[in-house]
Image (cartoon, rainbow, N blue to C red):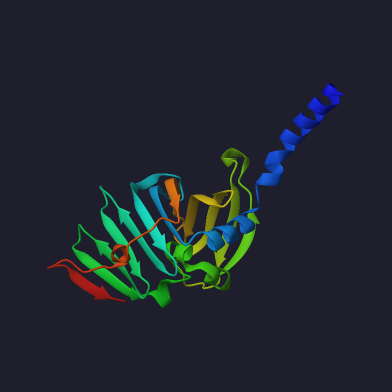
Length: 210
């Protein structure tokens, strides 16, 4: 009897990861349903079509639904991307320039806005469950997001989840560049101040509206 019980326990333990890991679309929907805010460290690498590294940078991202987000890129490429829910501000510290556009134009066409947009994602993207190539195998559940707007500037986005926790994001743009972002120290539903998502252009910078 003990041997039968032990064998059953081993079989059950082997099956548990299969039951526990949801598919990519289910993980994405759960992420939207149960994540009102988020804070995480991120590491971003941009490669060209030949796989050569063009940029590597890290920073902190924060989001607050609906439609508020903030990405602070640290050196060597210091930038800020901030949405207050109405406008999106891209501040390039080195260039001393701020680009401003309406959120309605960025939402659905920006991967950063995509994470904060919630239910609108399925109106702006075609979603499909995805798998990784054998040489990129991992334990994450992946979803492929194809923008319905052909002028979005990128061809597809891959989101990798561990259960409903966002771990990775890959953006493939129209110039065959790949932006790979990994998230760490993720905190779901932290209390974020409203001032986190307010942006005032520093004195002396150029402001360009799109």
